[in-house]
Length: 565
Image (cartoon, rainbow, N blue to C red; front, side, top):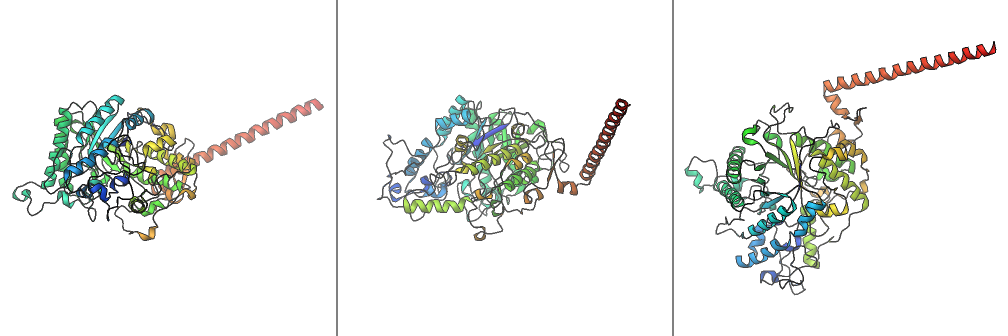
């Protein structure tokens, strides 16, 4: 049930700097479109490549037809850094990206135009040089992170780095640095036969131990280089997968929290990944204020990674935010656990990633983009425009998420949009700065003003949204996909299925779901009582009106008779 109460806490409202110090192919597809020229050290750049050096730079060379695409393009940072014959050449190529992808003007726009308060910066676990002999990673990105911190200091932005990857991969995703055949945490948390942990009582694998060392190295460097006035938060591990050992992850988080605060200070905010299920953590975990103040359980919510939501109508997408995304945000963290009435004094909630993308599966569209570059030398849909009707929906979709990710019983602290910019137009709905420029992402409200107070409740937004299904372009055909996607969930919520028609608005402006009333005996009694009282009020009003009319007519009749006599 969404009322009109509006919290005035100082919200965290930020944007991710994705695809920079940890590469992601869908953010910068041209950088992954390697040719035989690149592999010889003759770096060439595609038209309008987002991370190319300025055309005036001696490093800039246009792509030409003599450069032949590799038979197979890299898919992640592991395969990209493996593609070059030596690490010197790899580092030279990477430094072009680090230097040019994030600009001073980007940070200025995030702070001044968008009015964001924070940025979240994914970091590779190799950034401080923790690289084994058989690993292809290259370091060197740290100085660019330091430069970014300086820019953010000038603009008044807070920086929250996030250790986005882990040795062995904590999830098997490409954004862990190393795409595995299937998602899993086993490469990170499992103790292998030759692991030193076999000869000790430790439950930590060698890769978990390496991750703790990485956290120590990075947080120590932040403190040593006097960056804690700007770097006020720290994410210890992005998206550990659902099959991670819960005991290992919890002990890892305990140690990581101690390391960060020992190095950066007790006031440092620390956020932890929820393993794609916030409910698991609503069991008294970190709820005390003394040791776990300014800690956050980080969740990431997207509508595009399962085929069920991608076909929904505009109003149904908003309703899914109001229902499922709201419930998921609300699942943690409370002192009274199951009742969920007393918010934790320690750990709060944070939505560290979300976007306006809703109908296009990234990996399948990305295959088309990369194939188009290989054949034609240009990325398909590079100059794609978003129609006015689609932009109108995106605006409501963004506003609904802003409202929901803030309106959760005092346990939600804010959010970070993914991501700050994109190359080309195929994935334009992920592009924060484009959304701000085109108006389908509204300027962020002042720090102590809730989105709810500006945009109304999520249910209000459902009925402000035109239910125009012609703007939905589901991709790919769902029949071509595995229906048992691990992220899948049924679309069976009555508010979603009914496009919002199952909602009732009470006289005080509060929205009520008919199904929730039927499911909740107390709510049903209250609703029937209110309706009975309303019916009685109308009946009484009707009686009073009748009496008034009768008296008026009687008075007029008496006046008439008096005049006649």
